[in-house]
Image (cartoon, rainbow, N blue to C red):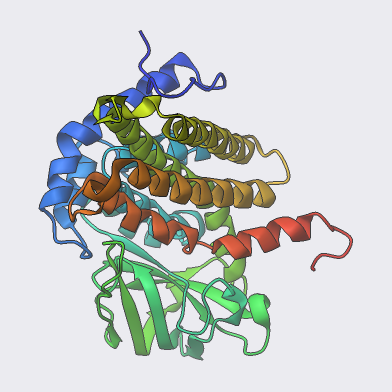
Length: 392
């Protein structure tokens, strides 16, 4: 019999094989990954965890067989969502490590010269190397068109000068997809993408200590030389490289959030069913029962929006960007509320350091900001409502 979390109805759009895959990945994550993740140092790159993800075959499912993975072609958005949701429900740390292998590598896979992609993608797919996606700067977060990291032509390459911050896997990544300003004053039209090896002279950085224990840090570029063949795509067309990657990964950020919300709901249902209060189990109190009902309904709705965006990406159903933004917005905001409600149902015990919900509460806050904050997603959605105007 196909396994699905008993707390929610099975989405009718999922095939039996997809449902079985979800269950299998959750089991694999629980049995093979959660322990490895727990043994790592919070907030630092965990190469043992990346290796474990590769050993169980999950990293390979992000990449084509032609580049060291296990897929006949590129990963589908739906498969990416299913994987991220299932892993997140058991180990947000493992999910984050898996997602970062894809996010930092996909611009290289899609836009690099064949010899550069052949150099980096196979070791990433095997879990032997880790990438970074270096877009955000101290003065340019969600407004990617305001990037200031300078890239100046130098012989047969470029010199990069400036700083990136809140970058996944920084400063320890083996290679970084870096977006830099090649034409001053040109906004999004003057940004170029580069593949920058992590051992490049002049490249530095430090780890950042965030509320969510994710491996995030800064990158500093002191005249870092990048050979011309490390260009990703075309000069001044790097913004398109970034956006095409984000269109693929934004719905899966929603899936990450749904997975965490699912874990919180399951914990809340178990607790409300066993905790005795006022003469009976907690769930018999209408205030608690209605909260659980709202949590379950919200998760189901968010999951369907995420799946719709993923299917649209895979089939080329337009518009893609608004669907991706809706998926990320709805799912991350829903997960924040659901986890908060789960804590309320548990009471003070959920505030203890190390409790599942305490960890989820810290983990869930970041997705409402990275890869475009919720306010940016609302702006993107609203702009699409006025196509003739193009902006608010």
